[in-house]
Amino acid sequence: MLSNEEKGVLAQAKELLEKKELCKGSNALDANGKRVPTGAGDPVSYCTYGAIEQVAWSKYGRHGRFGELIMMKTRVIEALEQEAGLVAEENADHYLQPIVKWNDEPERTKEDVLSLMQRLLEKA
Image 1 (spheres, rainbow, N blue to C red):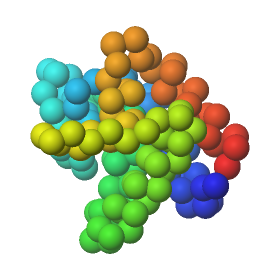
Image 2 (cartoon, rainbow, N blue to C red):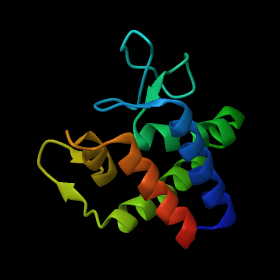
Image 3 (cartoon, rainbow, N blue to C red):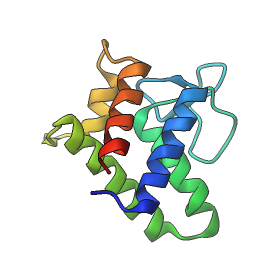
Image 4 (cartoon, one colour):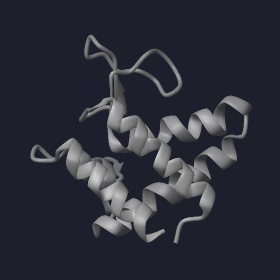
């Protein structure tokens, strides 16, 4: 169950994705297709993870509250992963969060992402 604050972050991330495009392979991209660091530039697209990170950054990171930023982002991402029935996979080279892998699947659409976010908001 998400707290009211976590629901707020998820709702704002959903609103952000409603206004922007969905990207894959990067947290955020600018109009030229170049990666944009969280909190910088003017992205035209975000991935699921990137949208949540951007909202959490705006709420906590800009104010130096990095511990809260990490905890909030983690709780919201884990709740989305649970709602989608995703399981973490580890390999020797790196750890890829399930939501990132799910987002980057070729068949994944912006509507899929928004639908997942909406389902979680309705349950929370």
